[in-house]
Length: 300
Ligand SMILES: [Zn+2]
Ligand SMILES: [Zn+2]
Image (cartoon, rainbow, N blue to C red; front, side):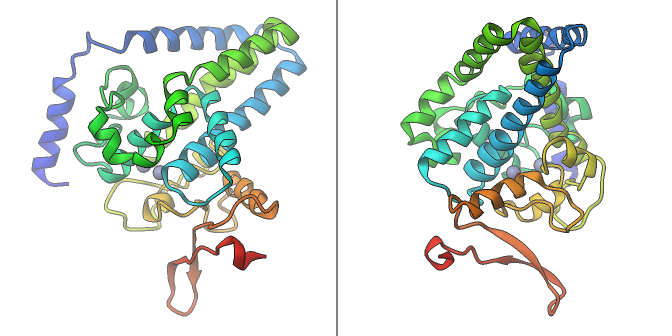
């Protein structure tokens, strides 16, 4: 990082007006945390199982396989109906609509740990974790920014609707959980699960740009973190990911547990995923190399 970039980062932090936060988001997050604590006093097996299932639906099917590896990086292809299903699962994590998420994340890859990165720990660890959500303007994208970073997502009418109404699917699920399961299932399935899931995703922005091992020289601070990978179904192999962003596989060694990759493999096995991009270690050249994506017709 040049001294010019460093002073730019400092300027961004110093210019943040801490009195002008995203109040709606802040109040919701405080309530979600309080409800998560309350959930501990309403323990029941159906509630715990609901929370685990929805943690997987939102975190793995939705954010990891849907928003991130499929929509943002186009690491693999699925029929449109499957894509819509995975992306709709992503709204269970309440991390905003697909357009805004994809734009923010593509900006992160375009400016990783440099000025313009919406959530680099170089602006502070807490800033990268939650500060940018509460005080940042990084998610208020202009139409021009959206058109530049995510024309593919923007041109889809369903994604335009879902991006405006991203809270609707979770609202419906929440009402159903309350009707059929009562307070216990609602508190665990929505609030405790959601709070843990949000922190897990935020750890990818904070912890995996601070702590862990580096396999590839990526020119940024990205790291491979096994414990963040466990919490996020494989998103913690973040140095691998920054080295090969379009690879649908993030855990590259057998011991790098990557459940999102297993999910994509399962879709492939069912004949639903094709054009899967990945990298493999070439023993001859002793280097990691992208493997040409196999198209569906070759696969059959
Ligand atoms: Zn990153
Ligand atoms: Zn990414």
